[in-house]
Image (cartoon, rainbow, N blue to C red; front, side, top):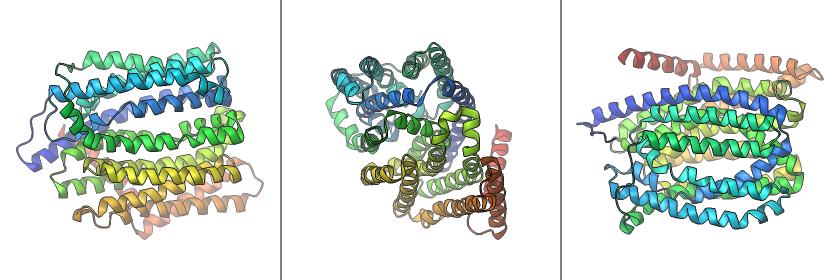
Length: 500
């Protein structure tokens, strides 16, 4: 599993980029396959399940997902980031620390399960569902270190194969149980079966075993970075509880179901982000000594993903109100505006994830925690006001505005720490602001021009107006050339294919 270090910085940079490219290709192919499964899953389940089913599952999943965050001390992230190869004592210490903390959290969730069920009126199945998903946390904790060893060395093709099998298993299980009328249990058990199958495959494929010994001094050292890294995920996860809490109390369980369903549908851009972030963190960690090379790599990654998303996502946003009732059924029409806003937010988060990976890889996890804490508190407060005045669509409007602000702030914080990244924040923001303005203009034109016409006519007019606006922007050649970057992506892929 070990990798010999390259003999010089340029060779090391080339090796990291080659492995990163192969990892991105493997994860992208897996993502296309997973997306196909996801479409099938969504189409079938949207006909078999109801917003109340998604609402009940969403409330239970939130409670247990907090346990997953709390059960990870960020020790694996510390091992990925360190310059030397993890020793057996280091990996074993991290492994048993994860299991001990997860055991404590599972026991706590089992005790609190009846309270969670009663608080949200989940019915007789609420308590056993919380208990089942709590025990399922071990499927996550037991895979952390074997997965870390693969990710540290950018062995993502093996990860992609495993995750494809997981996706097939979850889709088949969930649909089968939904057909049998299991309601929210179909969603819960589908995830549990996925976790069990993935764990078996991972441990069968990985040569790592906990052969070392537990050492307290290692735990203390790894926690120095790991706890701050993990707090960057724990705090937003905890504070995001305002959504099931506030929406559930103000608008009911069905509204929670609409929110969860909308986010699941809108998070397609985050699949792209997930690929890049999983590869970016270990890649950036290995390039920290090469400031100029890392800056060039970061800028290029941001330009290319921004161009692809800015050309594709806005047209999808325009088409959503027309497509959702036709594809998924009339019961999901109320979620269409929220899906539009969530899709825009997810697009911004895809680029934001790259900047966060660079912050963590450079050892600025504490700085990341401060930003996420303030952002999460503001989201909870402003989101509650938005729900009270605008309904569930207010969550999407608030989220997009907050993510745009956080994107600029994070870009500024990353840029100020490296002389090679001067002006990064302007490069990051420009395509989203200009294309966002064109999208708003196109929607306004469509509503004014079509009047009471149906969503199909409005979508066609808005899509045409947006296309003209994008072409005009490209002709002016101010800021990032979207088509130019897409052509660069195609040329890069071709050159890598030829080289391999």
